[in-house]
Image (cartoon, rainbow, N blue to C red; front, side):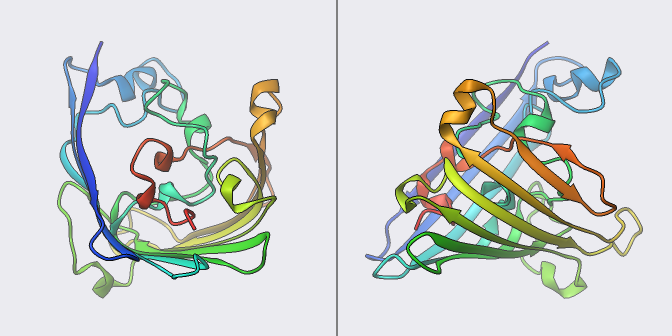
Length: 242
């Protein structure tokens, strides 16, 4: 049972404060069942081998990044991946271990696939920051649609966080994330929304105490640690990289 990912990515520093980043992938399986879906066929409720599927050629990133001269804000526009910054933990990656999806992403957040969107991060003080995004809720990176906002099916997110230092923002922070996903016109997705709160302290990971407390709509509680593809891709792909 084997799958693979061929990736081509890079970043062009076009101006002192602006850059263009891209990432093209070909995800392929060498067997009848891709690694990502192996556990599902065995009765598991979540997938392993996240991203190791048979989806073929995908445009996962193609965006412009603009930064403030003093580093106080960052803005990204075009083909983005909201799981690069929505409720992430910077030391977890699906490309370095075949973890259950519940430990790679927050399974309570109905994040869309990579697609057209706008995201921005801003320093509110020496320790407090905010990250917000709006993206195509129906995105399909296999068939990029740069006219996606016309149907009004959008995913929105807002994260407010505290970090001891912005040089450690990925691994040491406390944050609250609010999100909302519009219902799909074809009925394939109901309207969904929630709020999640989490503490991500790097030293807790080693001791096995790193946990994310999630408060989805309806009041049920679950726990999840989440991924950051920022950790395995060029850092200019990360909104939180102030």
